[in-house]
Figure 1: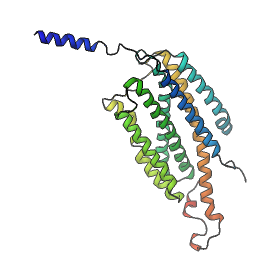
Figure 2: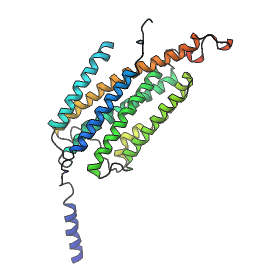
Figure 3: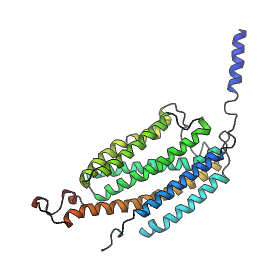
Length: 61
Length: 239
């Protein structure tokens, strides 16, 4: 009985920390994410410009 | 319509992208548990949404091409696969970065992440197929079939977090998040949507110009074989 109540106390103690913490900092991950996004979008836009048709589609040439 | 698509929309997309970044980085509150790291959501989620949207468009174009062949449909299929792959790659990459501080690892074989990786590999294969097949008509038919097969994974990616007990969280909705987080996500999502439409329109024109050049080439050059005079099979496909 004693061991059961000890287990119960331990289980409650283990459950308490779940969801109570908060990640501190992490701005490096945030800036890396935004940087990668902007770089990828800018590079793809550049690649589209480099590959653009020489004569616009639908022109009479 | 052309002016709106090629001149106005890119400007709108850039303004919304800057506004979304400002709101997401400085205006939105930090998450209760993830803190500031959660700000990655404002670019990760829209990127994945646009990938799924573009690849669904690819599926629609693939099915349409098989029933009603058209170079325009084929060109849009090519454009949507490439743009979808771009946004999908960005989405998976950002998810991996977000996973490091929250899960402790950059990569884990979670159902959502695994199915997303399969999706990327499938569309890399799709685009590789388009590069390797020279005959435009065969290329269009084969890639349409591969596009339909690859699209099977798209809904699995979306529903994977609901179907399986997963490390990746289930999709949030405006009812389940802080109202101050809804606005940055919406602005960012519209920015990505505008950008995706611009990319699709530009890439579509490139693909269509390539198709026109490929189809026109056999007719432009004299052929020794009488059987091939009067145009190749490819030119029979109505644009």
